[in-house]
Image (tube, rainbow, N blue to C red; front, side):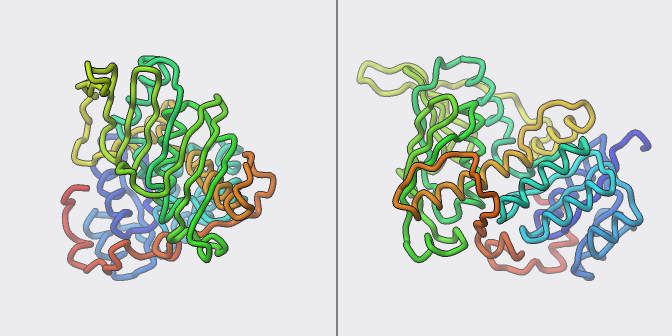
Length: 357
């Protein structure tokens, strides 16, 4: 037991309970503490996972417990404080989730604090860490499909800093490059001129640092993910394992390839499991993270740049942004807490065994 990484989960809503279950199941981690502001849920979740060290908030937890890992699963407005408290407490690794925040300088501060203290900063439950997505990214970077010549992002609208950070994170992986320039058009105007991305629909173009040009479609085309292509191949991520197309048939249509992906070690946990597994490996061995806090910061910056470009009449906007004191708030449940279904979790559900993610 002493060889296991000691884990604290901060925030025990539905997603926090998923994290707790994964960490409580993996062979090299031990869930030793939780923090949850709701006293009833705190007690129920503690009993569910056999954890006696239960606290109201991160600050109180870190006064009494010194975990190796802190998983921050809180509404956006509380993430920065909990991440910095974890770093100050001397954790070896800390994870957060999407979006990383609203104020760009807050994201900068978290990334820098972790880097300065040698703390591994994981990015949480994003499809960039899906095993198949990561493997397709490696194939692309290895040159299996030739030199990339173009790309597209589909359905980048509604919440470009929240759910939309999925698109940017996958695009950066597939392209093997950063976003260098953003040119964007956005509607509706009242949302564009507000401080939240709730309902914002963005069309435009991204230029990557390797010269790749990427079109942005704000609505379904009918696809809703990310495409990249070369002269004779297409890799398409559309919220499932990527589709691989290579070559053309006699009528000039792309040929779908049945290229197998590596099976999941813990298939019941899906990409939350691969995200956490990558994070644990990075803490233990220094290996590369599949999704990081840096990735989440980059996605927030692209979203802010797109909003700025559209506000100023589709002006090409270079990254990194010079003004770091800019904000873009996500949809309310991501920032203030709650659930996309607006359904309060019953106590019975909070105390129930894992039913799959």
